[in-house]
Each structure stands twice: as structure tokens, then as C-alpha cells.
Length: 206
Image (cartoon, rainbow, N blue to C red):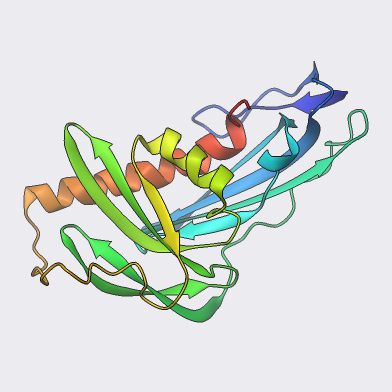
């Protein structure tokens, strides 16, 4: 199978080439969108992946959100199409817990296909940062949670039901603006940035 390959660098642009791919793969064209602080950054890529790595979904931590849209095909050079629209979807009414620094008592309203609540522990600089929010079913599949765990270097878990990811055994902590909280927010933002670029660009090998 021959596919177009275009793996973007930090600027989001890339030089398109062709690639001979293994027989158990498909061509993919995909896009991801990172929204944070009122700004939206879009990335696109083309390559070949195994069928289980071809998915669309979104994850939303409140301070930032990633939407991924992938389309796969099985004929030579079939992934030349424009990337499908992957704009941020509208709210769906479901609710999950969200972290703001050390305070994980906030409530986040989920978007269109985000039917699950997600919790992740991000290991950075010897510190563990909790992030919580909403995620779609595909993001919460066993394959993708394993992939996310590899990207962030920490545990990822999902559950269904409003606010099912709340820390029910932890006393509420007041929100503050300490340097530690600011660092935790930055660690969380780095996580989302990693997700937005790593999932479409570097699918894990089986």
C-alpha cells in the first residue's frame, strides 16, 4: 500500500511525500485542533496506520480541549483529500469534574460526543499533576487510553455518568494562585498540547 505522508513540525506545516506501508495498515488523513485561552491551533497530517489507530474523538479539560478527526482508506494514495472539519463541537449537557490547579471540585459541561469523564495523572518534573474532564468514547477505548498513558507518562482512566470522576474521598481544597498551582496548570496544558500533536503524528506501533 502506498500512502501520502505529511508529518507536521512545531509550526504545523510539513512537506508531503509518499510512503510504502505494511500490508496490515491503511492510509489516513487527519486533523487535530487545540483550543486554549480563547485561541485555536490546528494541525493536520497524512500517513499510514493500523485500523485501530484510525479514530475520531475529543478530550476536554476545561482550560484546553483537543478534537481529533481521522479518516482512513485502503487504496494507493487515497489520503489526498482535505482533512474533514474538526471544529470544537457544541455542548451536550453531560457534566464531569474538572481540576483547577489543586482544586478538582469544579464542574465542566461536556461537548457533543463526549460521553465519558476522564482522569489523568501527569508525571512532570518529579511532581504528579491531576487533570480531569470530558472525553469521547473512542478516546476512552482501551487502545487509546494505553496510547495516552504512553504519551503523558501517567495513568489514564474513564468512567460514565455525570461527575463520576470526582474525588469523593478528598476534602474540597480552596482554589489559589500559588506558583505550584500555576505549574500544575502549565503541566496540564503541556499534556493537551502533546495530545494534539502526538496522536495524529506519531501513531504507536502494534
